[in-house]
Length: 68
Image: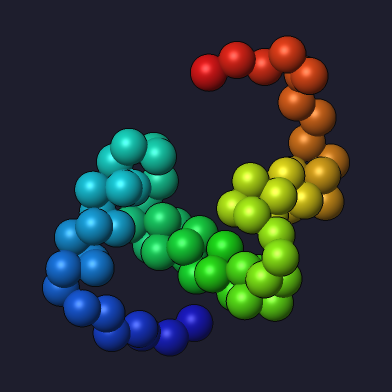
């Protein structure tokens, strides 16, 4: 594990997003990094496709009629 220096504004955005997503700031930053890495590796996939693939990989089963 190491230390990553990020811009103060980006840190603030991660803090705000982490509150909404019920994650720690570190977990939010890690999520963004992982999604970004996967998006670069699979440029034809949408964010939703990437998240769906990760959920399927983790064997998370969502109801077909899940509503927000």
